[in-house]
Amino acid sequence: MPHSLSIQDLVFTWSKKSDFTLRIPSWQVGSAEKVFLYGRSGEGKSTLLNLISGIENRYTGSIQVLGQDMAKLSQRHKDAFRANNIGIIFQQFNLLPYLSAQQNILLAQRFRSVKPASQSQELASICERLELSSHLLKQKALELSVGQQQRVAVARALYGAPSLIIADEPTSALDTQSREQFIQLLLDCAQSSTVIFVSHDMSLASHFDKQLGLAELQQQVSDTDVA
Image (cartoon, rainbow, N blue to C red; front, side):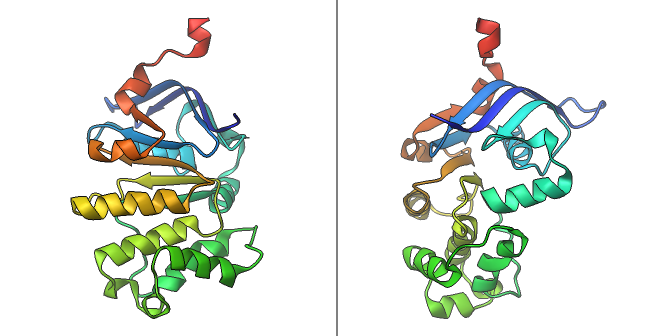
């Protein structure tokens, strides 16, 4: 199975004066796999996602995303690669409050070089599955409930059919029932995409193909060391 993500000998440190170091000897995520990554607050989960998506660049080792060595891309090309290939669901959703729900969904499309063949058809299909009505799509983000904002954030991540979807603690503001519904909705809509879902809430882990702790990931020995 081809890998959507392959990490080898990754080392990240905030600064020479910082005690925080993230070390991942080896990690591979297969195409279309759904991975639940858990860990304590401050352990480095969000930092790892920023490294994978090319937002954070200070590291040694190798990070390959969809076969692309991220270190070989300029920042401009990393931004373009992320826009074309990665959908991100942020913990706080990161919607622009005075834009409509639809404008927020389409915002990332401005930075993509590859446009959907039928933008209106794809948008309509995603919004139907996420129960985003035409009336709701016209409302400003600040007028939406938390649950509605969350569905808009998911629609934005799914739009353009990215090969990799990254979700960073997106259920932290929801109650138990809403969290379960959100996870099921996300996975149903992202069946052909690889999903890396980060959370500290272990009650959600059973929905995913694989469950992995960040502490465990950092302790793994690389295949080359085993050999």
